[in-house]
Length: 236
Image (tube, rainbow, N blue to C red; front, side):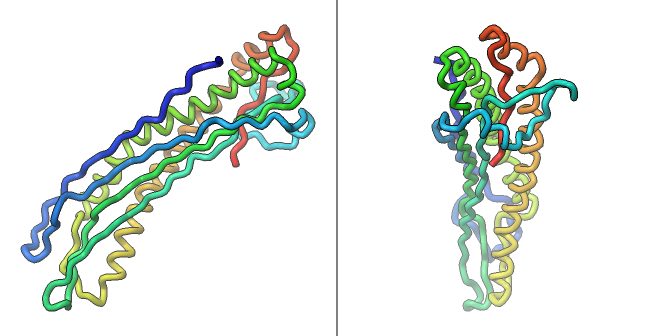
């Protein structure tokens, strides 16, 4: 068995409603913000030839010099998807002429679906397969660690962003309610998008660190120079 993959942490954050000066609009309970990380089991594609693998674009930079020929024996591909689910609630006041609107639940779903692609020729050799698989699992581990890290901070970022704007809005004229609802939903998306961009930048840096010259040389030496280190990962 090669490596023990770090499990994705599951956590939930309960937020407290921000203070509201209005005596008309009151939240029935605190808003809840939950972060739900999830990872699919690692899939393997061992059906493609080494020649076919050379056609893929690898998004880590080769550590080899320009005068060195290298080839791809395997790579990890997969995306980190993030999706906010926003549930708002409301109450009509002033004889249905105005509305109070508040955040009831915000759920952030972070999902990764890793797949390791290894050349058919490599998969047929036990030593080569073990060496390349071990390297590619390091890329999977990086993704799991980065998701765990951002799962711990993302809920707080959203909480703080919404708190500064108010968990509850109103009373607002009924004719303006839909526009307010749209803005409240869009704000969550914007807060999440900013953190998602930060996560992907850090992810790229960490994945590049896995594909160091030292790591390539280590993998190459495992089978007495039979293989060149597999190149990085390919983003879907």
